[in-house]
Each structure stands twice: as structure tokens, then as C-alpha cells.
Image 1 (cartoon, rainbow, N blue to C red):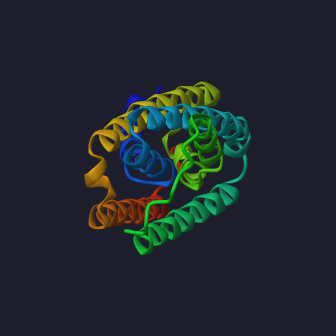
Image 2 (image 1 turned 90 degrees about the horizontal axis):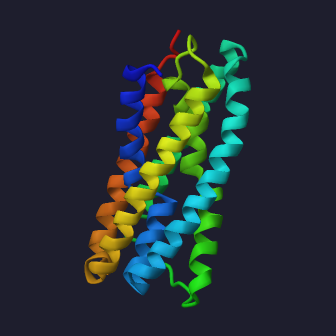
Length: 204
């Protein structure tokens, strides 16, 4: 591993996973409305969905990274634009009412899986951001595997923290102005990620 690139990857990944996106929003909504156990069940589902999504993305990345510079640039600019779009959407919908959830326990894990496996933030990050941290002088497949597993572990810890926090502080998370603040922070971070991606260059 290139530890300089990997360190930068850890910092940026932690920030992007921590801010409210589709998965974090679902976990918070579940914890605020149903409590800690349903929220943790949701996290189990989101981890399974994220693992499937990362495996699918990882299989294609090694091939994509061997393609021409033009294809990489198209992917980079598309990812930057999409992250910026997600940021605008998060800002616009900050403070929207928390969606009502069914009370059946198994629904939470299933819903978490479906949201995670189609999570646009994860798709945008791992198809556009991840290549920036890969050293072409080292085995690409091994680097993708390590970063994917690391991302999954970070997501498991942070999403579980959100689940417990939302369950314990249900009244706080249900207040509209607090939801609005979380949405605005998420929007700013995603838009900042889009700007950062547009300025990056492929290593090597």
C-alpha cells in the first residue's frame, strides 16, 4: 500500500461516510422513531447492501483504471458533477419531514439493504474517488480490496454510532431545525467533494 495515499483516503472516506446521506438518514430516522435495536437492524442491512455494492464496483474498477486517460477524465468529471448535484439536493431538502417507517422488525434490515445497494453516494464515491488513491505502481486489485474492506468497517462503526445516538436522543433528532442543520452540513460536504474531485489528477 502507498501509505500517503491511504492516509488521505481514510480521512476523506470517514468524512463522507459520517455526513448524512441516504444510509445515515435512514438510520437516524429509524433510531429516532423506533429506538436503538431497529436502528442497529437497519445498520446490518445497510452493511450487507454496501458489501454487495462494493464487490460489484471493485470488479470493474481494475479494468477501468487500465483504460485511456480520456475515459478516466470522463469518469472523474461525471463523478464530480453528480456529487455536486447530490449536495444541492441535500441542501434543498434539509429539514424535510422524517419518513414514517413500518413497525415490523424484519422490514428495517431489508429496507437498509435496498437503500445501501442503490446508494448514489457510495456509487459516486467508489467509481470516481477511489481511483484517486490507487498507486498504479502497486497491485491494483489488492489496493481496491483493502480500501473496500476498510470503508465497510468505517461505515459499520459510524452508522452504528448514528443508530445509538438517534435512539438515545430521539427528541433531538426529530426536531425540524436539527434535521435541517444535518441536511445542510451533508449538502456542503458533498458539494465540496465534487469540487475537490474536479481538481484532482490521477497519480502516476
